[in-house]
Image (cartoon, rainbow, N blue to C red):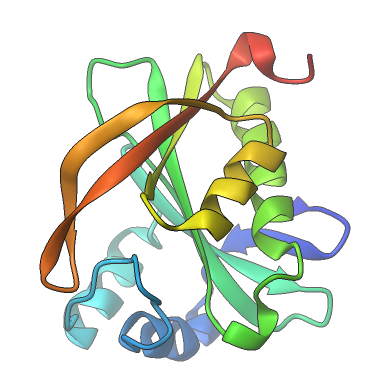
Length: 174
């Protein structure tokens, strides 16, 4: 478990499955930029039973407030197999919990954990152009803008350009 000032990042527990699945299935909660799709609850629960959503290539963790309320999700995955890198993402579920610094704090804690525990040189965040809130999270955590991948992601009926941000091990704690 990763503990920071106002939240914890931990493995998803069986008691979290209903709330996590509910938010993942709630298109309104996903906002304007995250992809939407109807998930199979059976497949969702089977994946939990198989690996707890933690594998060598991809992992999902819950963001939990001090009072143990599940407030969001963060994920880590290998996006380009030949890069010495991982990509991370984050989602604060409830609109009332947004703009309170949770995503910024979660990214900071996750970056520290990844650089301390994994032999990797680079952490990336891809953010839809226009998602200024997520861009601020990346910038506050010292990620540098590298460019834009044109029409790289499909969501809400159209292709979106994606900002590419990264942080190198040598930039961590510098």
